[in-house]
Each structure stands twice: as structure tokens, then as C-alpha cells.
Amino acid sequence: MLSEKIQTALNAQINKEIYSSYLYLAMSMYFESEDLSGAASWMRTQVLEEMSHAEKFMNYVNERGGRVFLDAIEKPASSWENPLDAFHGALEHERFISASINDLVALAREEKDYMSDNFLQWFVAEQVEEEASVSEVIRMFKLAGGAGGGLLMIDRELGSRVFTPPSAE
Ligand code: OFO
Image (cartoon, rainbow, N blue to C red; front, side, top):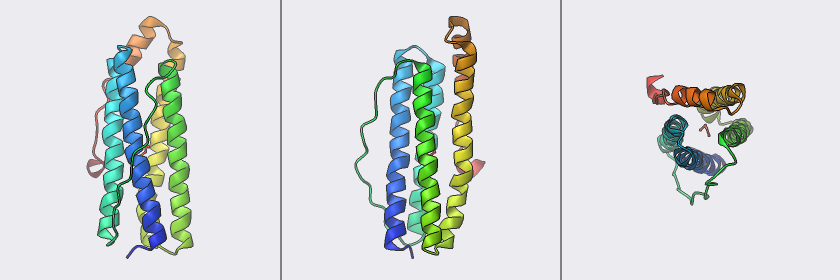
């Protein structure tokens, strides 16, 4: 059984994961409006990944006999200064999520809930990947220097990303 404190914290994280999905959907729509279909598709993949994170948390809460309560999802921004600015926003958001996962681990340990601690370790590792993949895109954009041809190449490359469900990793 989950403690009230852990259940509340896990529910808050579910909301954050769904917000992540919503934020990346907004970014995808922004890229569509900028005719960057590859970046839009990259973000669509991220939308699925974030929903799979939320599902992982929901399944865990249910498995532990807890209760999932869905809350309102904050409205995301709808436009960014340029593509690089959007990816900077994504990196900043991923760092915020990493800090949130770290706080959850700290709380699980404080509560001596080692099952939750163990469950959360998957997310600790995942956040390393999340931050690295966004940083890699930022690096690519910087190398291209916002130039036409380079930007098109990056966009094509970003369009090749496919979603792999966590269970298939
Ligand atoms: Fe769920 O990792 Fe990104 O936000």
C-alpha cells in the first residue's frame, strides 16, 4: 500500500508527465507552422513517449493499491522565437522533470518506501536520456547556424525518429 504522501507525489508527477506531452504537442504544432515537418514529427514522438511515462506511473500507483486522480493540465506556450528557442525550452523543461524525479526518490527514501525507490530508478536513467537527446538536437541546430540548407538537413534527420514503447526497450 502506498502512503498518502507518496500517492499525492506520484499523482503530481502523472500531471507533470501529461503536461510534458501537451507541451511537446504545442511545440509540434509550432514546428508545423514553421514548415519544419521533421521537427514536428520528432516532437510528436516525444508526445507519445511522455504519455507512456504517465502510463507507467499510473500503472504503478494502481499496482500498489493506490488511486490515480487526474488534475487539470496547465496550458502550454504556443509559439517560440525560433526552432532553437523551442528546443532550449524543451531542455529546460526536461531539467525541471529530472529535479522532480530526484525529489520523488528522496521522498521515497525518507518514507522508507523502497518499492517506489526501485520503481523510480527507471525514470532516473530515463531522464539522462531525455536531457541528452534534446541537447543533441540543440547541438545540431547550433552547428547549422540557422542556415537554410543545414536546417533542412537537420529537419530531415529529426523526421527519422520513431517511438519505441518503454516495454520494448
Ligand atoms: Fe517524461 O520525461 Fe520528458 O518530460
